[in-house]
Length: 87
Length: 256
Image (tube, rainbow over all chains, first blue to last red; front, side, top):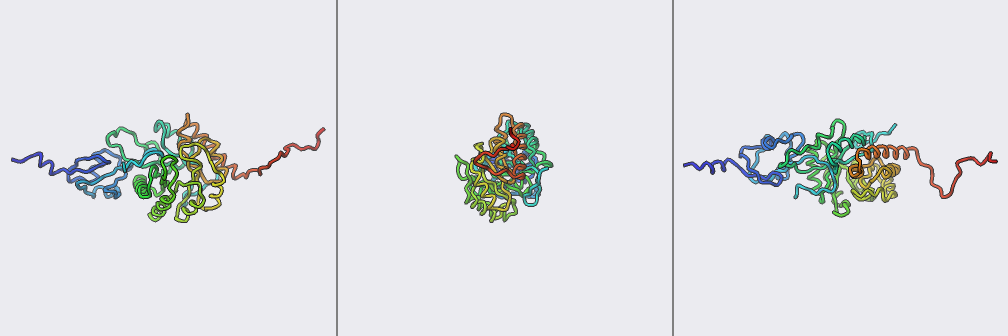
């Protein structure tokens, strides 16, 4: 008998998006992630493991288990704010 | 009526650069930006809030046809972080301009000049147009120019203090020490502070809290616009020399 749960698990990987653990299908690229999150492509920048991935590479960049993704945009600034990326 | 100025070949008419933080709402910010007449607005780079996506986006309130967006590295305490934020800002905004801040102390928000120089050096090599926020220190400003900064932005007083230009003579010395634009960044509390800065002959003034922290930010934005224009005109006009004693304005001849 096939364990459907285990099978589903095998097709998913866990990544960290803006500090939060997130499960995504193994086949996903950054492009899929940005679409799923309903973000405006032209207003965000994306880092994978501290390397910036430019927009034109989003659909070519596969995501791997444990990848740390940072998605940033512009906010009102604001000098007193802390550097949020590093928590 | 007003002379133009340049940052690395880009021409600007307004000498007021404004921040976008601390406004009650994006709409008030939008109105204040409009009233300020500014052509450059500075923005910070932060994580997108993925749990509350209902939040509106800052860029929806900044007409990028009208304003040049200047990403900053506000809140960064190391050269490494500032470089990382600058790169992210460039990616998000597709612009090489960066207002570089590397803070050295939480209480004063004074810059860490050593790290600032290092970050400027790295970012200039990567093709950035670097506008560093620095102390009112002519030696540091000269070093920043030497490593390729496009302008220097000495503070008038601590960030958010509203104390005005505390050491006008240091700003004067900076103006004589460098040949790149000098922009007073931080410390402007009210219109007269902006005028005083401009009367010294600086190329521009950058402020955020001075406008956003006023009871009526939109009116203060307008006041700052006029103050900056006024100070620039007074500088170009050339003020009369200061004298210790009185000189009568009316002729003594013809008195009874």
